[in-house]
Length: 425
Image (cartoon, rainbow, N blue to C red; front, side, top):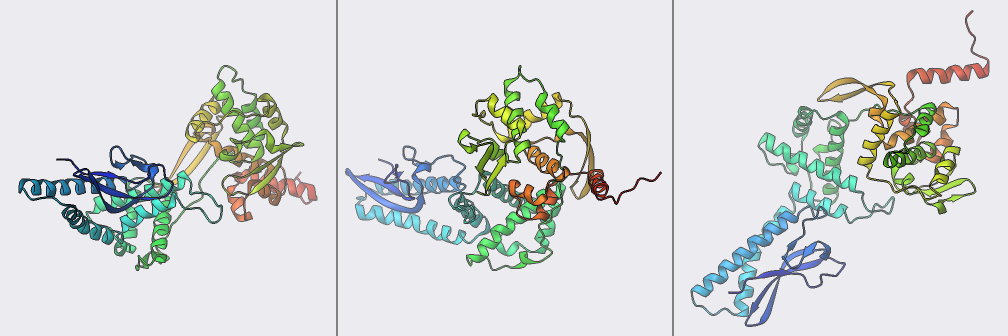
């Protein structure tokens, strides 16, 4: 006996389409809707299942639903065959309807559960446009959503409980934070999960799905702390730039791109996409990828040299992760060994550790170096912000990574210029 299959009408379409149960009865093609819609891009019509793609967070649930549905309908069809009853078109549709009805009702109820909502939230987020930037939500934001969901599932396992909207109260909050601390997560990472959870809950509340307002309590706090980060001084940048890397082309390209970032103040997503047409009469004109803000930056001598080296066409950037790995190796070769003490709260305890500066280098170090070095030179903060894209001076000042000694020297220089500083003889 022929078995049922699952198909969508147009595999090349661009809009979501219904998945249908297909069965051939006496060469007549019978079709019945499952009620499930999917973008054709994520559907394998040959296998009759959702493709294994991260963009479909509920793919396993859908595929299990289809497998269960297939088995149930085939069992009913087998029973009819063994009973020697005549299978008709009407009987097939009746079987399909009866089989699907309980599932549809169950799914309708699940739509109001916390995890079902989170799955739907993530699925929507990957298609929605940010009204501020006009861009699709980034991969890193979606990854943050998945990470929060996984920690909530871990919570269920640890406390042998089932989470739903009504479960999210101050007791949950305290236990959730304790669990993450036991896993030795930093305060900033814990705060990130709380902030993401509140994003889920706020959206569910606006849609009328969540009625529990306990997450609005002041004690339900997404706390954070200022992270210690480094910047490279102009001397260190020059040391890095002069490092002979001719025998290691991949390191040389990473170093050159990093130096571009350090003398333009651009993010990795921006300096890795500079094109010759962005440059006019010694100025770089670029639209920032993250904020869509347009900035104009005069080309530093070193930037001009690097652009000339590559005839205006900078090398293609590798992944951010691999870039950071190479950057640390390059910093080590350049002997950027100045000791750095970094403090962080992990597992509820304040931990301080000593590093060599190259161990803490990342793509973002270049941007911090640009801002910090300019500020040290006395260049107006407001003008630096026009290039870095910071909206408030408070946010910009947090971004700077000058040490207390460096701030003291800035004050000393200011007093010397104003004649207010006198040396004690």
